[in-house]
Length: 380
Ligand SMILES: Cc1cc2nc3c(=O)[nH]c(=O)nc-3n(C[C@H](O)[C@H](O)[C@H](O)COP(=O)(O)OP(=O)(O)OC[C@H]3O[C@@H](n4cnc5c(N)ncnc54)[C@H](O)[C@@H]3O)c2cc1C
Image (tube, rainbow, N blue to C red; front, side, top):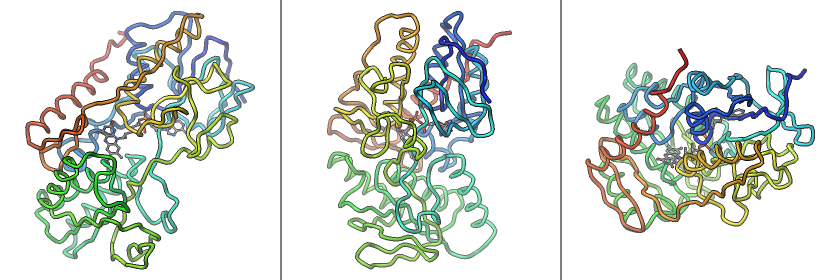
């Protein structure tokens, strides 16, 4: 089955950060005669920069989620609640689970990435994304802790910035809020320092904060296998754990492999500087799922957000035959890592600082971003 379409049909697949920005801008400045559709399996989408604050108990779930249905209403866009699972780029059609397939004139993909699950036994672990599933597990875990008096050992695999933030947020929530010292948090990393890819000063500060919160850091500990009883390193060491959380490197959605689009080595969609898929001028991709062939970027929401205005312009320009813009990623940007309680580490240009005022700065920036999606020009 398929729904009607014409070449002025733009289909956005995934409610990621870039598409949220496109819809927000469309709400202010719609293009008459164009039908805009958002396809998303969920009615809302999480802003992951605030996930550590949700885990730590600083935010409620609704404070870190964008209401996609309301956003579509403001943009005059159609909302289709479904999960995409295949594209036919030659026919210009996208296939959805539990919904008739859609034809598109222009297609844009912003479906994100999930932690890699290629370790043996990874199915026993809880991935940090999708965030809603992770949050459900996190609530169950806290409930279990409240209702029993047993001790608990939790392991976070992956020493990137996200893994460090998650470990610190959990340590803070469990030990401070729940006043429980029965919990041990282990952060397990294959490299020799955390967070991966950060300058030495930032690594020192993160190590200090992890230590302050009592997080056990295991460096040079490549996990070879996850089992019911914990993890085993590639060198045969064992660590007993009750629950294992995955904050491993970003993996591409597997369904893209059969879509006929050019993918990079890790399975992400190759795009040019205009965010277009090579060979298909009517297909765009943004956020974690997009990969710049010549200059792969770290998988960070900040790029997805900044691609939003370029994507907004280029989708409209592609319909009206105007000139498309290039996305030029910033070389340096301010990175703010939250440290469980209301402290943060700011990193920029190789410099790093820690403190409570930096958490308030992060809180201010994040809340300001989220306000753009709650204060909408809704039709009466
Ligand atoms: C703990 C943690 C903290 C982080 N903190 C930061 C930070 O402070 N700053 C930063 O820059 N980055 C941060 N990141 C990285 C950031 O999460 C990602 O880079 C960012 O979310 C990517 O945004 P996106 O738009 O690509 O996709 P996402 O935000 O992942 O959204 C993808 C959307 O697509 C939808 N979707 C998925 N599959 C389908 C499908 N088949 N069909 C239709 N829809 C689909 C999903 O429901 C979701 O709504 C953090 C990551 C983690 C894990």
